[in-house]
Image (cartoon, rainbow over all chains, first blue to last red; front, side):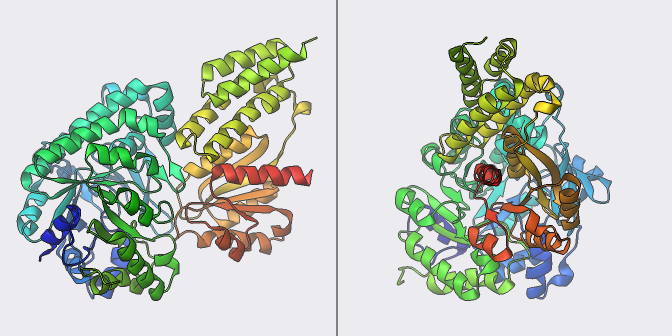
Length: 383
Length: 220
């Protein structure tokens, strides 16, 4: 059974040959962990370059994923040819990684958002300028064109290369409506918009939806297996955006995306950090197939499985805030085994760390997630 | 002379307006309160602060969410713009002095910003140090502001060790015994807080502010 069949079986609620393995969280690899830990471990350190093709498409990253036994390939955000002519690529930056460099540590992305690398390790970014901080700027603001020439060049080649053997998960931009909204407006301003200026939310979301859905359809035509919708609407102890506001402004639009994907037999993965308990039913209702990352500190994966496991696949679940950074290898093994036991029956489980790996995770702990799943995740489960 | 019923009703309107996230109603009620010569500090402490307490309780019970909390803060801020200019310096009653920030290398400040808003609503003087704050800057802020409480926030596990650095720097500067150290952030646990010598590990913004209020009240 190859990775594609393994993954599809588990998403369909059937037991494949073993529990499939996913990548760290949903996003592209963090530069710090990839460059600082994984590539050196696998003897590929000299391959690291701040320039070149997107990380997700790089051969050396494919090699790492192969050695780990990861059962999917992913395409993280896209960027058109015209923008690339004036931009440079830097994998330390979010999104497509492409941006117009206005200072050694500062890029302006395709959305006009200015990102800066943060001290002390210069491997994380923050937004230092929001293009729609002034709400009147929305009048003249133009979202990127989903059909811009060259946007899908790498994606097409990547799908062509891997689609028979691997399920390919793709995302048009590494964030959806809620995150993109505050990236553009500023966090505080955007939160107040929901109460004071809901028509601005609606206009901005309509424009963003046109871009996201347009890209999603193009990727679906190309032959991806899974469309990922990443949108961090929750924090450690609960939703950031009130569920009623999510249902009003985001749910119907997400349903539109899901419906379009279903027509092309593409599965949909939804990613949000934190505790999204209040909206899981809604996500199932609109047809989301996979929930990611299910941080165990925020939601009990076993309980999610018990309550919703017959209708949705769990992806992630391995602690990034406790076990992986602070536990021993034995603790990681025990957690993976426990997760397989409580969440793996009948398929519907993809094991992965429950968010982006950082440099405080010992490499041996990280590898233990994958080794343990390969050793103990064979179906029928005998744990 | 204002009838006590009328005074209570007006302050109750302010409290309700904040709890209902109704900025217009809150501003109107504050203007009426000033017109009826209710003392500005009483408007703040008995009307607005009570409204924020109700909001905090609802948040803890998960009846409302973070976006609601932020909007409540905005309602309060706009009402403060009306009331504060009427407060005489002599009448100012500070609940306490806090210096807080997000540690070096970390830029996640949503929680910290909520804490600042709630502390100010509760009458604290707050030195907001921002993000990416070195241990030395925390110490400087305590000295400069005579802070009694130090709030330290870190979201990422990889920046959590910086919290311990701040506590160590406070020790080195001879300031540790004189301050209450409250820590917070997604990965923070009470066990971690105890291990590194913090006084309290808050589970969320409202919990952290409640701890500051309880400690300040006990100190008085």
